[in-house]
Structures are given as C-alpha cells and as structure tokens.
Length: 449
Ligand SMILES: Nc1ncnc2c1ncn2[C@@H]1O[C@H](COP(=O)(O)OP(=O)(O)OP(=O)(O)O)[C@@H](O)[C@H]1O
Ligand SMILES: [Mg+2]
Image (tube, rainbow, N blue to C red; front, side, top):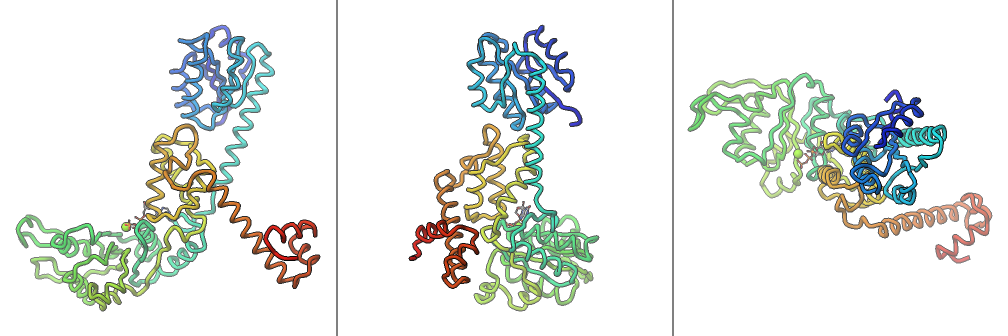
C-alpha cells in the first residue's frame, strides 16, 4: 500500500464532512454503517480504522459499534482501530480496548490531535508488520519445497544434493507423513533427468491385478476390459524418474517382474510381444522396514539390492529440533490466503504446544491440524485449543520452560565448575555472575559449598 489507507466509520453527515476534510492527509475511505464498513475492510484492507461506536440502527447505544469492531478485527486482525467516543459512549472506550481496539479519541477534541493519534497508529502497525516480517522471513530456502532448518534436515539436504546428480537407485525410508514424496521430487528436480518426467505410482493404493497393467501397460484385448492399448508407467517415465511409492507393498510376482525389468531394461506390455527399451531412474519409498521384510521372505533380497543403491532415511518430525514451528508458520502463510484467513497469528502458547508435541503423523499431521485451526480459530489468533493439542494449556508450557532453563543452568554450572576445578571466583567469572549470585545458584541446584 503506497498511501496510508484510513477507514472512517461515522454515520453523522456533519461529522463525516469534518473528518474527511481534517484528515485529508490520509487516504480516507468513508462508511456510515457496519455493512459498508466491513465491505471496505475486506476490499481495501485499511491499516487503520476510525470507528464511531454509535452506529445505526443503534446510534444512541454501542451494540452496532461493537459488532462492527469485532467484524473488522476478524477480517483484519492487524488493523489498528481507533474508537471515536462521544458524550454517551465514552464509558465504553475501555471495553472496546478490551475487545482489541487500539486506542480511543474524544470527538470533541480537535482534529490536529486526532491526526497525531492516527499517525501513531499507522506507525505502530508498520513496526509490527516489519517485526513480523523479520521473524517469519526464515532462512533462505535450501531445498525447494522442503521447509526445515534443523541439523537433521540440513544433513538430509546435503545428502539429497549429493545423491540427485548420481544416476543411482534411491530408496526413501521414513514414517508416514515425513515428506518422502517431496524428497523424491527434489531428487528429480536436482537430477540430470529434470527435463524428463517424474512418474509416481503408489503400489499400496492399487489392487494387485491392476498394478501390473499400471506398471507395464497392456495391448488392446490383452484381457477382458482392455479395450484400448495402454502405456505403462514405467514406459511413461522414459528419460525421467519412476517413483515407486510404498514399494514394501509390491506383491511377490510383481517383484519378480520388476526385477527382470531392472536387469534387462526393457518392458513388455501385457499381451504384447515387443520388448521396449526404457531408460529410467528408479526412486522408491516405504514406511515399512524393508530389511525385516527381506528376512521374512516377503521382499526379494535381489530386488532389494537393486533398488537400494542408496538408502535415504528421512527423520521423523520429532527429531527435527525447531522445525515444527517453522513448518507451522510456513503452512499458516501458505493456506491462510486460500482459506480467507490471512493475517491470523499463532499465539505464543500455540507455538509452545507445537514445539512440545511429538507429531506421530509428522508433517502431514501438522499440515492438517493447522488447516483445521485456520478454519476454526476465532479472533486474530490461533490458540493451542484450535490445534487440539493435548498439553497445550498455559501451566504445562510454563513448567516446561522453567525446566529447560533449570537444566541449562545446571549444565553450565557443572561445566564451569569442572573447568575452574571448583574455584569459586573463576567459576563466577566464567559464568559472568557475581560470587553471591553464584552461591545462590549453587544452593538452588543442590551443589554443596
Ligand atoms: N519439509 C517439508 N516442508 C514443507 N512441506 C512438507 C515437508 N515435508 C512434507 N511436506 C508436506 O507434507 C505432506 C506430506 O508429505 P509427503 O506426501 O511427501 O509425505 P510421505 O512421507 O510421502 O507421507 P505418506 O507416507 O503419508 O505418503 C505433503 O503435503 C508435503 O507437501
Ligand atoms: Mg507418500
């Protein structure tokens, strides 16, 4: 927004005129009732709103003004609403602040003063936006499509970087929802085959009899219902990458057929006689323990070695320190717009709950809970309740933080004491605290003097 858009909601024509003139330094929009005010809030997204609480059909009371305030804040949680108070509504100004209004101003006081109040509201709004921008800017994306900044993910990104250009088969091992498919796509994008296709097939989702036709294709009339010739996924992936998802679920007879393809590099469509040479790189994924399947005899060992030239373990979300919050912010922005809930924020308690939760369903679960919360949240913030996370209540969070701090303190004390061989002055210096403070700390943590 190039100019400072100010929405003035005032029903009194005289007052409207006065305000329009007195505040001409701003980009003023005017509305005289709730409907118009909300329509303008939605379409023009003013950063600051000047709101008269006494609006029709209740010009003498405040009910309509409060309803307008609530409506504006749910559309624009970051807007700064300044309440215009008259004789009969002054007592309600504080209530309005409690509802989320930014400030209030007396109608009878001069316009120059009001302009300063509004100027300041714009300034604070800008500061907040700037602050949020800095906080959520995050680090430059290291791997397109993959959000993450934890040591575990940085390690994975390095491995992807190294693996992608090498024309080897890769198996992605990870719990469900960890991002196996996203990783497969990154490998494709960073590989020499990026100009070729990325063809995915889910071996668990397709019934065994159809799976064979899906993979290898069939000629016309090959079996009942085969009205047309059909190209299989393997053939479609020629020159590109074939992604076999849930490879652990591939039936044994198809395992044999796939192995033959990998050895000969030709496919034969069902009902066909022609051998078609196909050049693909195979990437597969599973949430199952392939080695255990091999031991049980449910997965062919020779196929296992063909497919697993490189195995890439994808860490579960609970092992990616700090990433849950990064991902939550990412999904908030990504889905906020589409769901019409732009500008919604995560309350600090919600962030703490996200950080503390174990995410058994990994990134997919986080994605789903955030989408739900975006839809359900009331007001400008998503609270822990909206995410439906157990242990999100404030008490638990504080307790947690205190314990983290205590443990860190205790660790630092131990290390400093060890380094200074128990010398109190040295220890105090190392820790940057006074001797009396050090004595307090030692006592608190149960060290004996
Ligand atoms: N690191 C990440 N950054 C951003 N989005 C991610 C990340 N990891 C996963 N996602 C998203 O989470 C969802 C689940 O990812 P994906 O489908 O790749 O997981 P999966 O391991 O294949 O899961 P499943 O076992 O359920 O098939 C997708 O919508 C994906 O875009
Ligand atoms: Mg998947």
